Every structure is written in C-alpha cells, then in structure tokens.
Image 1 (cartoon, rainbow, N blue to C red):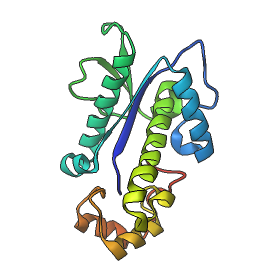
Image 2 (image 1 turned 90 degrees about the horizontal axis):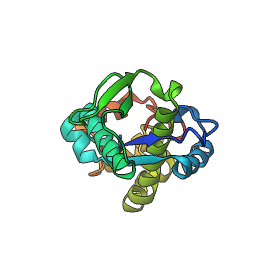
Image 3 (image 1 turned 30 degrees about the vertical axis):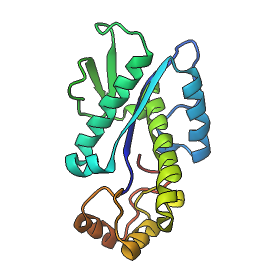
Length: 194
C-alpha cells in the first residue's frame, strides 16, 4: 500500500551455486537476508531498481512493474558484458517488458522454478523492505513502517485511518479507504508481497 515497487535482475554463476533459492515470499526474513548477501557476493551481475509510489499511482502497478523491471535489467547489463544475440531475459509472469531490446521468455511462477528469478525476487523484496524501514519509517514514524513495511496489515490500516495517506502511499485515498474498510490483511511483512 505504500512505498516504491522494486524489481531485480540477476545472472548467477553456474560455478558457484546458491543453496536455498526459492520464491522470496516462502522464506523467513532471516533466510532472505542471508540469501541476499550470498546472491550479491556470488552473482556474475545483478541490478536492482524501483518505480516510485508516484509512478505507481500514475501508471498503475503493472506499468510501474515494467518500469522497475526495465530499470533493473539495464542496471544489470552495465555490470555484465554480454552478446545481445545470445542473451535471453527470463521474466516471472505473463507480461513482456517494453523497450528492452532483448529476447524475453515468460515463466509463470518462475520464482518457484528458475534460480535466477528466485534470486531476483529475494533481491527485490529485501531491497524494498530495507528502503521502507530506512527511509519511510524515519519520515513517518507514526505509521509503523518498521513493523509492517508498507503492507496492508491491521496496524497499517489503523494508521491510515488515524493519520490519512502520506505522499508514499500508492493509490488514491478513495481506493485506499475501501481497502482499509475491507479489514483483511493483504500481505504480511514477513510473508506476502514485494
């Protein structure tokens, strides 16, 4: 409900495999942190990027996801000498990235089956959660971002009802008010969402 949307791209080193890679949502926070450091240390290249809350509101989640993904691939490519004719970008889901200029393969539930996609999901989730705790919580301590990390928990909804949305909340107040009123958790900080 708040904060930027992060994406990551990773080229793993086949000579240095990483045990335990899987969908970031299925890992504990401690496992994600450990794997984040391993991925950063062992990957041949990686890129992490985001779309801001303002871009999410303007372009929608799908459009913002494409922005963040394209930025992350471009950041990765700056670190990785590649032959564009041989490179194939594997994308988790069923939507291609626009204006990437590279061959793309779509893998539905790729974070569960492709090591590079799982690694990217971990980098994106840890980076996003760190950003929210390190940058949003100090600016808006009354919201408790250090606990819920911007996800739609009861505590976050209560803070929204008490204080209203910040500039970092992702949707219009009318739509957010409907989510707040619905009363269901839509992603706990240690489980769901990126």
